[in-house]
Length: 319
Image (cartoon, rainbow, N blue to C red; front, side):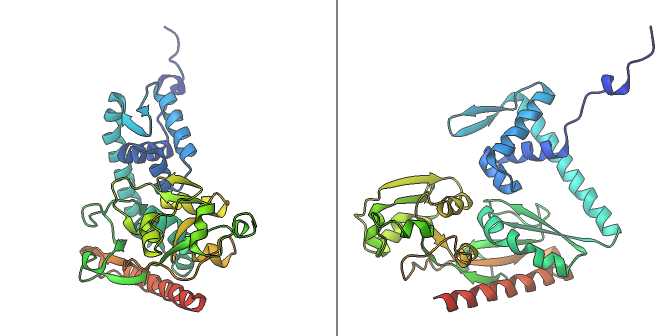
């Protein structure tokens, strides 16, 4: 026998944490699109990560069906191991940061609020609190804060479901928004709500009816236009996908304040009609019991309230 093979040839190549993160999210949510929203990646980027991981391991991890995903036998074996590895790494990372004086703050909220409101302005908090590492978990589920190791949640809903200790941040209004270039087309006027019949409506795909306040049918009922038939309809699985489509001029969306305020202020979107449907829902901050006395949590709540107050004031000024 000669000399042993080099180490790089005898030991299997371990997948990177980025690939495991993409796989764990896709396996948990059974959707590349939802995994991308949680990780702030495109659907195609998550798909490429999964493909690379499958090539490295030499097995298929998902069965790709029409509008659905399912884990293969190999995927079912890998999923709990990947979840455990990531949980262990998060725990170790938090302990190491704590030892160096850095403090971790784990926040959960919806994909739409995270991508359209929280992430774009988060630098304002980290700039004034450089010793706090904010970790955002974007998930459509209502997470158990203590069980899932989270400090704070920003939740959307009616007041009676938010809990007695919830801090109200801002209310929500719902109204049509579109790209300014749609208003410039003389062949398709948009002077009153009935003119929506000339345009494509961008819908949030909600087959189980869990979000009626985001349904065009609800808004049209309030506007007394139940018989309106639009020029077309496009369905999207996530609200954070609808707004970029509206900005690109693909149709008219139902805008949610304050999630579309920045796009309106920048001139990327316009609200063509006065008035809006008020679904009597709001965003609330909910703090885990074991995190309520931590300074960084109180500071983050104070920052959220300040940002929310600025949004409410801007809404009043803008009508």
